[in-house]
Length: 305
Image 1: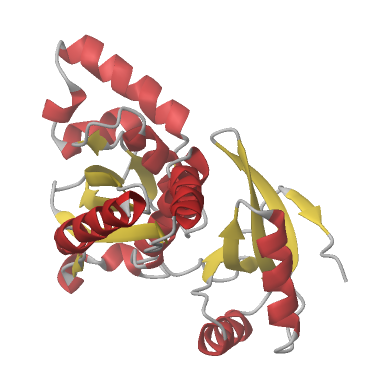
Image 2: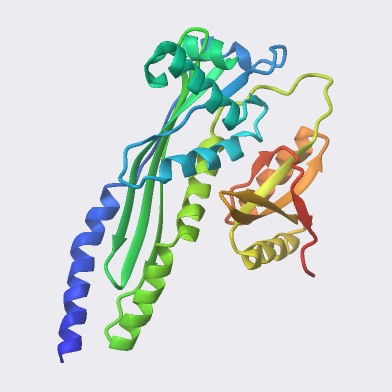
């Protein structure tokens, strides 16, 4: 009887608290750039250079800002920009702070561009990172905002805010079920689930960034990244799912923050129309949202048959 009452008490907490948690972090917004200032998107314009700045962390988690920045940069590097290595950006910011005797955040974009040799800078903010743990229920919620700014005039050309959630847990009544659900919830709080959520947020953000046209006459080589997982088995299952609809992807491994990611990749493609056709078909016939990425020197693993 006592266990039953305790279970009801936890159930009441879930019903009361979870809706509040969900209502605080369910949105996605995007601000369109001014088409009049988008000449840099033309195929005749030189490929612009971009510096991804350290992300402001408005949460109590000390590591989430750096984690999101690295993941965002990794996805952004697949775009048709000349991205500046994060280490080079950080060295440049150190020099700026020494010469200006102040924080780099107080330096206008026009000056940052000159120091970093960047045409654009991308500012990021981790606005919210919530961890809800109620024994039988757990959820992570992450909200990230990014803005791309033109270093020539200091004007923003694109901005997006993205929120993602990951949750697990049930509403068991029996004590054994309660203990089992608690164990599953504890696993959710580990780094793997956080990294997975960060990866999904970064993929969603970079997928919407306006991209310059490829230089005419240059060799084209692009891959389609279908999905990315921390679990090798999930990558293999995705390969099997794609084979059932007529595609033959492969698995590539890449290291991010000391963790191995398994990316399901298709390509390379030499023609844009063919790549866009397959990307659209995969999105229509699966639950995934594929993105274009540049071929990487990462390790390739032949998927199991």
